[in-house]
Image 1 (cartoon, helix red, strand yellow):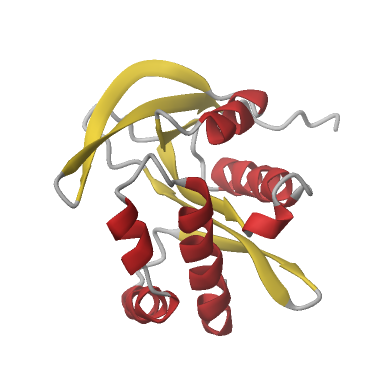
Image 2: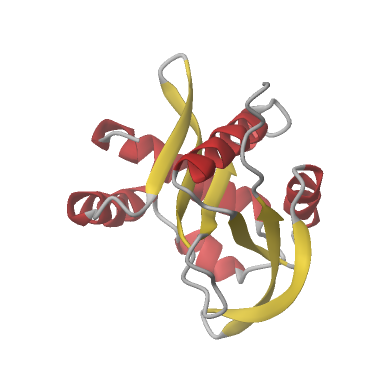
Length: 171
């Protein structure tokens, strides 16, 4: 991701939340999301970035249509070589078009390049579409669950993990 991608990433993230999470996250929270505010926050994070989080974008015709973020795991039960898929979103009008799959492939390759041996991610338990996507990608539930508080409402999440075998040198 480059600085000039920030507005596109914020648009994908905000529109993605608003399309994916009705009925899972309080509607008032979704309605209050702002691309401009998300972009402001993202610019601040980008400016102070330490390089520990890798942001990847998918583009079509110069426009951002997907975004993924990868970093070291912050989990209390983590091992030193655990990474975390912090975000993966495709623009709502690009769902099912391969954007997410391409981002996932690039994210897995980047995780291996960074030396991660395992990747974890959290997903809203009721988000069956995302869960199916991750399961098709080889992620498995690991038994961890937690509530994420959104405007005082508990939103149940579950954790998935995937062991990252080193790439086969034979191709």
